[in-house]
Amino acid sequence: MASSNGRKASEIFQGQALIYRHMFAFIDSMCLKTIIELGIPDIIHKHGQPITLSELVSILHVPPARVGHVQSLMHYLSHHRFFESVRIHEKEAYALTAASELLVKSSELSLAPMVEYILDPTLSASFHQMKKWVYEEDLSVFDISLGCSLWDFLNKNPAYNESFNEAMARDSQMSNLALRDCKLVFEGLESIVDVGGGTGATARMISEAFPDLKCVVLDRPHVLENLSESNNLTYVGGDMFKSIPKADAVLLKWILHDWTDKDCIKILENCKEAISSNNGKRGKIIVIDMVIQEKQDEHKVTELKLLWDVAMACVLNGKERNEEEWKKLFMEAGFQDYKISPLTGFLSLIEIYP
Image: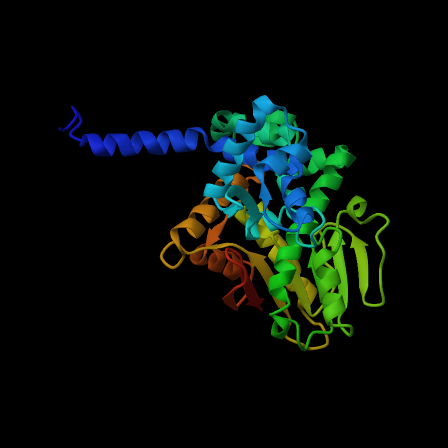
């Protein structure tokens, strides 16, 4: 049977399911936040083997009336592969998966600080301003909700700034895991500047892998306070929109997606200036960022990239870009050539040449 608009009932029901799935999507985030706050990944990790529901609720001191609710939470997250449901002595038990291992706080690759930062209610509540954001030129959801940009908010609130830096440092560990297999990118370089490099997680990894490579981290002065330098790792407080220290190469990891095209061109022009006339060498810019490739990527990967695109637009008036959009930026900034290589499941490594 067709409805009055000509669609089959099955199509309408599929539309309803899609609406409801997105309507409740915020609960996905809250489930993720809850298991981190309860320390469930850490409990299973410390347990050393899959844990039964009775063992888990006993450790958590869950009231008897809430045991079934915890089971619902674990069942849902197991369905989404945050946990693996197994049987032990005829009882259901839960084991860690690759995703939940990344939520163990003691892990070198833990992304728990990233989740806690993104889902902080003061920041995440700003997305309720998206309707107003659509009509307000040049304002982000933070400008509307908090009365200032994200960067100004972080400058004024040291606790949030510390949380942000920790989140970015943890994310850098994931990029570093991939960069360890990209040694050719850094071979032949004598110096490199990590622009917007935060507390130096990525630069530290590069400096340790290449002891003869001089690494400099450029970031806002207050970000760099009390950081320890080494023989080939130093920190410089400054503004990438004004100048960048001279070097053979400049690294821009997850920087350009924060900014408008006009701002990106200015940053790239300053990068070009930094690598020019450096002992006659042909310098390069190394960009780690997303490249939207809808025809090549799996559907879920494209979905993630497009979701990030919306998030960057809302939070910073930035954007994720496809190859044509990247190429346009590079050419307008005066570069002649570039090369895109895969890095992680959704990030690419782009080498740009003057």
